[in-house]
Length: 91
Image 1 (cartoon, one colour):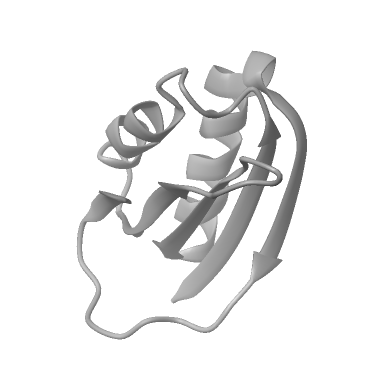
Image 2: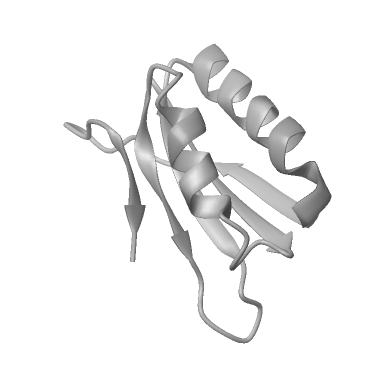
């Protein structure tokens, strides 16, 4: 089991980034969440958990689909969350 946090900067709020992320996640065997971050940077953060290869495929696909909106991104491995299922939008 593997978990990654990704933070995206650019034109990532108000353009359907979270809904697209959730919809894409449903096509992969992963769990996690995505949320808009507050000022000053108005970034979007997500955490994705599952098999390491599946998480990597999901993040690569997300980058393909939303590349025009992303100016910068940061990824980091983080501890696994036990018992998490599904992929949701957090408010």
